Image 1 (tube, helix red, strand yellow):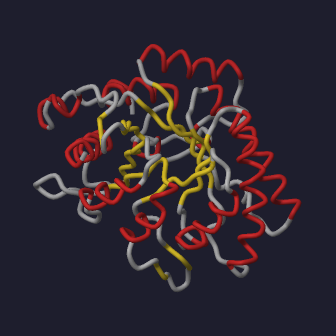
Image 2 (tube, helix red, strand yellow):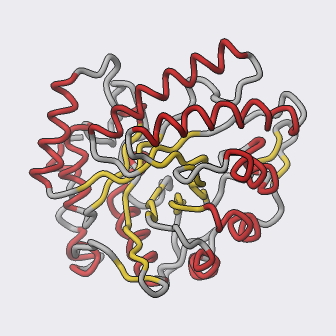
Length: 304
């Protein structure tokens, strides 16, 4: 879809000008300032140069995000072209400056597990993500997100051992670039809050924390089993949370998200002293992607 077509002019009428206002920092919980970001999957649902007929070109992403009212954007490694060139990174920086947006979190994962039991595979994954740490630093990100295995293949205690090694090494490298490393509850081992707490306590690095996802709580597959209470999961992880993925799929007539009680979730996040970025991640189909992004952002603003 052409960029002009994507930026649907009707959103200013049907959703109101308020939804398109500038949100630099919304004060929350005393002196904290929560920044509302947009995650790329909201607008671009394919990656590595693939064409998404309803999406946008990644280099137009900053301008589109700004048109929807966002001053901060997340990035995802999959949405950049393969064999990313220095001039392409510079183009992204130039487009961000022109649009007036800043980077928040670089999302990485899916091309190797930094907690892999196989030391060769683990080392390869760490080296892959070190490259994306460099990209994140170039783009001015505050943090990089990673994951530690979606499928349960070995005992939790054994997986923890390998994850401690991988997270420690990648976290140390991220620190050298003045970045936080955030591990997301992204199904599997990481959707067990006690396992994640053990990981955070074991690594014990000032720049290592958690990106809390509202809905990624699948513990095992075939058959699917879930952590029973996502609100309790976020509460347990709150001391380590520095960013969240505020997932949304559809909304009631009152503007509430149909699966997650945002007011309850953000009340719980008052217990997260280092919470900084609330990432809008709309993945629904009933609304257009731009409308879904605005609705989610509006709901976060309301509960803050």
